[in-house]
Length: 499
Image (cartoon, rainbow, N blue to C red; front, side, top):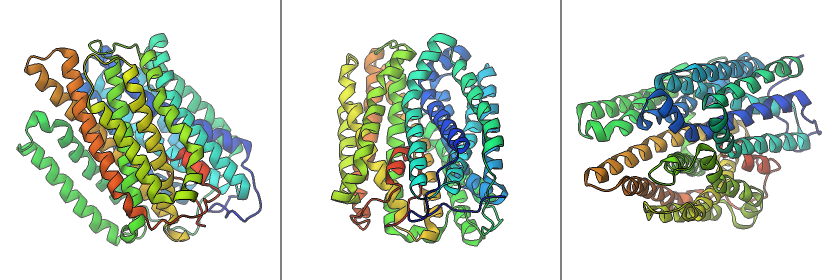
């Protein structure tokens, strides 16, 4: 018999997750997040092996997030209509195929294409995996399952750069993708044998494919303009044309969302002041952390600066991931005591301070000078993620929680894509300008990093100012799922019950 839609409310009878569901969903989300966080560490090795410049290879990071933003809501809707297990298995198959494509690719174009496919696969695995957990559990069992899923997500993100660095030194950059493909493949028989199919019979069978395509049509030309604007000229016909296509696509997206039966983005929810504030906070925090990790992964490995090996560079990013994980247990209690708005403001203040310290980077800085800024930034954004994710779902009615979660998850992917493209452009443009002026390689690279970190500091400072939008998400008792939501929120917004 097929399971019905929806997770149980906290007061329902306890129903723990079957072991197969826990293994399939937690292992897959760990692998997806480890793969995602490891890629920036691999880029110098991929560049050397394929002869593709790092400026071009940033699309391996940006393209992943772009596609993920377009399909994250659609994949969840497909699971509700056609079966969550079926679509989850489709995500695993797509992930395996993308890993094989990337590992066998001898060109940067193949790597970028594979990563774009991987963006769709990762979003599908995260969305449907969370749904499978929700429908198979209830009460305290659901809290335990969500917390374990969130912990696996956080561990994957933390371990990714280190594991990636080890594999680059030991097996070549292709090793990560072969291993990830093997682990994902092992999840397939577990899912087939031990996970029950489920769907939502009450949901409309309409799928907003037009909205999905239009989101991609908005993001792709806008990100292309951000990436190439410096070389094409910001007032060139190519850049203006890209922005024009993005604008027309955005207008078309709004028109479509007003008319379709089951919209990708419920525009009615965008009138909610708290949801808007929380979504902006999620977008900014995801953008800042992804942008910075992209920058420092490359900076640490450049021979002109620190010259670290891939393994050493992966190890060097651990203070950031440790800082993010360390604040996770504190988040629900801080929200209970202070309220969401002040916690968001404090988190963005710490992140702003971390970015501001890196604005003063010099070419002769050693690694020790980076530790405090990394810890400040990651811990600060860790404080932002949990409360913002909770506010985005608890500010709306119970019927709208899924739609609000979809908006937040889309914003997280958009932030990662847009900020990675922006900081890559600033970093490359300023660095090249300083080299043209006669500066040494180390000083030019430091100037590029400094300018990019100034952009990130402005973004974090903007988040601090806008946190007043979350003031209406008043102090409340943390919902039972808040601990799991806090752990998972760097990658996915977990719907939690209203209290």
